[in-house]
Length: 386
Image (cartoon, rainbow, N blue to C red; front, side, top):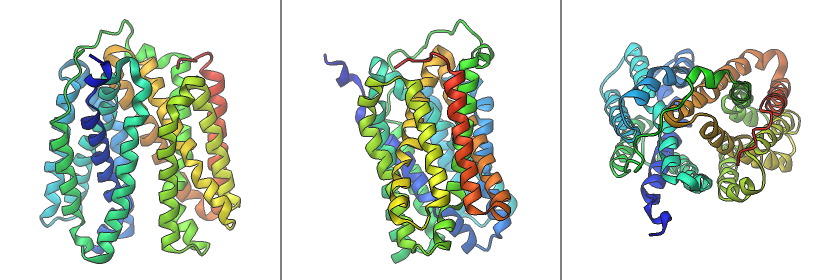
């Protein structure tokens, strides 16, 4: 039998598609829903900071559960179901205490799903892990389709108060698809001969994780203020949406090309180069905002600052965190980078936005990304696994 036929491509791709469709409906529009419900800007900021906090906590809460007790696919199914059930509470009248509590519990379950699913996908791919990007690309497709479709629905016939119902429908679809994803045949990974702490304390691993933090710190001003920045410089709402979509399209193209890139260059080289291009992206964004052609180029660099950086990082985690440590390693990567790094980057952007101005903030983001590239190049040594 062809080994490729044993890989559940449809189930894996479908899960990525629907999981990121939830994010596509949630991330750009949830603040609009909260505003329509009369929530103040201060409380909106707090609510939107909760996912970053829970991503920091996820490895410590879930790591030992998956390490000692349950198989990956079982935890993924349970977390998908609990995410659906918890979010459904928002269909009833709520106050701020209930909203914060629900969002904390929801993101605590939702945040663990993707690190574990990345681990399960790589287990299914086994020796063909270079195929990961070809499956993960469906997540980007799901995100961009959901962003565009949700925006059109909200613009035409769906009131913003109906957004939770749409998100709930997508969450239900995620749970249903999770039931179709089988466990990997090698359902009991070999026990690692090193403790997790010993792995993390190795110089090449510690510097890699710190570089991931700096990478996402640089993205903080982008996710928090990019739309505001464009609006202040006269870009229309349609232009803003198109530029966000262009970044995701560049990411999709990268996912299609990355197997050929990884076949030629080491993971370390791809990761460091992504950080360098990310630094260039933020510096250009700080000073070329009024040059439309440059903005198009800047958005195309999302393929590097996120796309190739993320793929290389996922494979580097697989390289360093072996056996029973793999799932915890993927969760730790998400915690340090998207959790702590993204949260600190957003907070720093907000703090310095007025005194430094947009150009200063994005230049700072570029410098931080360049620092991450230098740290990775120095500290990761000869980590040249493909």
